[in-house]
Image (cartoon, rainbow, N blue to C red; front, side):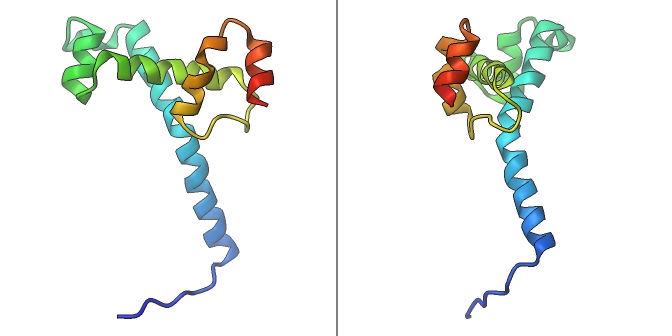
Length: 108
């Protein structure tokens, strides 16, 4: 079977780029949702601790949940449209959270 390439339409390109942009935002959205669950104690509906929630609901260790939260916090400190492409990049900037100007300068 041979696959053929069909030229992309502008609407196809826009849809693909929206998917890419959405993917860039995902770690931020997940981190913010986890932060809200932790800070507003949403986990208490079924679990005693946030750590139990992470483990039992998502199969994540404590560090995974907190890394996502930290990455989201970093992304929020950066200019809109210029956030890291992934959680790992954001986490590398986390030690600079106490110095927002240095964080922005380093990322730039």
